[in-house]
Length: 351
Image (cartoon, rainbow, N blue to C red; front, side):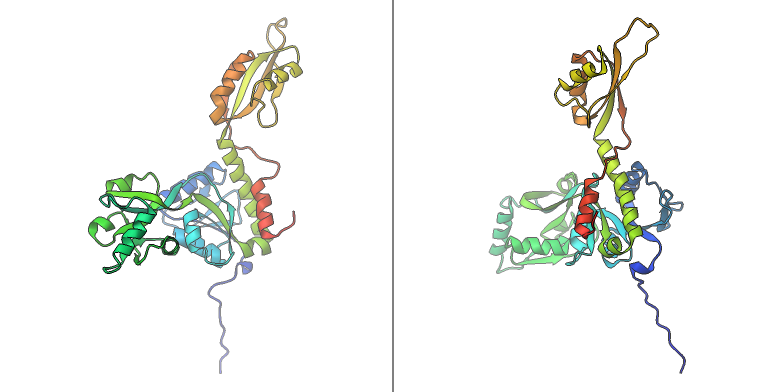
């Protein structure tokens, strides 16, 4: 009898030498994710728009796999890929009951939306979740309320929690907003960004009907992060750049010339103004002018939050600041990102 050889069609993550990162494929989420990574200095090299595997040149041992959003979570959960970037709503729906999926960074700053109940505008008596539950109860002798959603697990939990019985959950992959007008569903539970699409399809959100807030997050497979040091090393490299970019986005650099008798006097003028100290304090250097007799000028450099830019400029003017320059910042690297420290704690890894 010939010897039979059996092959495992799904190799374990520990048997792979390459590190895999899954990203959303196609559409707005792919474009925004690639733009985000590019801004973090992690440009994705995808030569052919039809290919599903790409690279990040700065991390040679990292493979990029483009997948449907739900599959990003499933493949991270199952260990087919090690890392992923996807919406928090999708993580909640598909991560499963275990702790295989670890959220490495919970706020990448784009893809903002919320999962919400939307009912027809002409349901004048339904303006809250309590109203919806009352409507469902009043129809018990008829058919159950039909709700269409791509998020069956979260929809089931929400309807049961609020006593919206009886109900029937229908699934659809395409646009859901047309279902109530078409008559194939009574109301929907779906992602909402601006709300314009709902209004254009004569739907309204109701009080208490928001299931969760979502934005894009960075996730990883727990086993890969704890058992493969190379995956953890790449994770730290990516997290450092992501955090440095996100912190920089919120700040600007201001450079101004201020007259004073010494750097210490100029520094005190800065500190006498509220919230003008920068991240740790101003950088002060002497200004050398062509006229040697015109002394006592110093250039100060501070980093300020964008939402305080104009207040900071006004405060600089109060202390005699002139020639004010405002420059964008690409990265602000911390001594050690707090999310890295938190990740090690979640994984049970000593620092």
